[in-house]
Image 1 (spheres, one colour):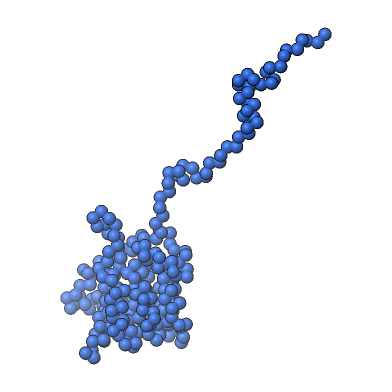
Image 2: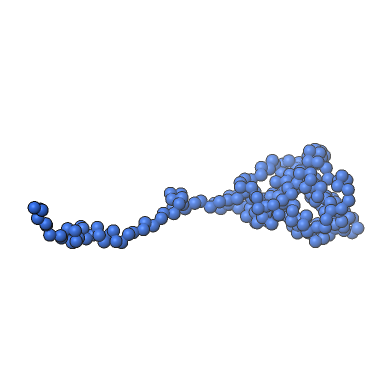
Length: 241
């Protein structure tokens, strides 16, 4: 019906504004003795499902709420693949998306993570002082107020999304995506897993040099050892007189 798209947009915006999006964060878990990266749901899949069903004017609202999350939690939004969901739909970005990305970076979002997205959008226009996003502190207050309103209705978001700690490393496929950003060659060292050095490299930091042999000296020494040296076989000479 005619209310389907607006209701779908409001539902997606509520997931973002209430903090429920954190359930999409990829976190390390051990399953059957093996390390796995698990999440409650896929934000890129949900975003694409909603995005393709919205008209341009409602897509702008979805992009605004999504980039607001990137301002509120730059690191956690990355492991929830929030910026990458925008990249996947950059070809159908609504008017004003480039300005939203510019404002998000200026307000604290990870510029390196959003670099690829910005490169796929037209150059931002308009007055940079006119912004549709709010600062991080204010956005966090708004999220808290949203949760309190939902709790009054019997919906406890805190029980669904407990405190989320950013892991020390990131999934391999995210490291590869981070490498596509124009400044991600300087990726954080804690996010790079280095293989252990082999024992030889630990015990011998420098390669051993092969000793050069002077064969003339070696043959002379062997002749002396065998008693066949010309010096040893000279006849004894009588003393002068």
